[in-house]
Image (tube, rainbow, N blue to C red; front, side, top):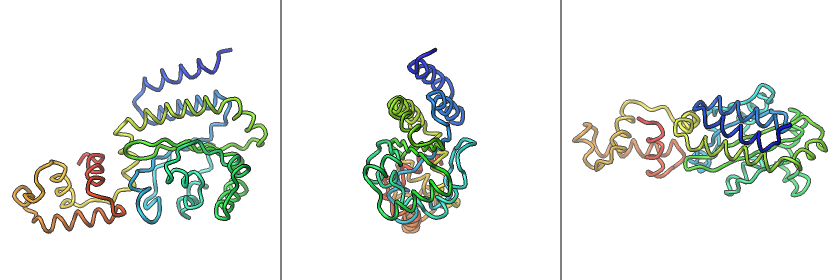
Length: 256
């Protein structure tokens, strides 16, 4: 029988042999299953500006990539009711703590706040997420996040985690590193969070991205400096009050 280290090696070789995110995600799930986990997995990407903004974490419906066994109704409920407010892993991420969250272990050792207890009961009793993990990683543009759930009895899941959590974490970190280094994938997941742009906004953003002096914008586009400044301020407000540098970064992601 091949050791788990061979499984890791095969995973890395296969992962770097494909450029498609969906194929990479499928390879990740297959590897997770070979490690003995159920493979009920969801992936999403949280842009930094969404984490920094005031208000809802999901101002628009994000793109989730998930396996057939993942409780999609829970995801819909999560987004609709802004359940991120009660999610232990999101609270950790906002504190720049990107360590693995084992929800059941956290509840049993650290304990839960009242709002977190509500979230826990909803996930476990209504949607059957008896055991759950969140494994995030931080990148320049945002947070890459893998969530896994299991319907196994806790003692079986705990035994599996005791034996293979280190390898699971290693596999997930490799997956995250490749995803976060792929600008096309980051753009794919960032786009749902961005406001739709009209022709004037696109023209102004393209000019800003060109690096030319902003005060000369009218000479190149016919749009006055005063009006262009107002448009930029409105766009920044739409995105939660981000600064101009962050806005320029998003222009780069959009490849206008």
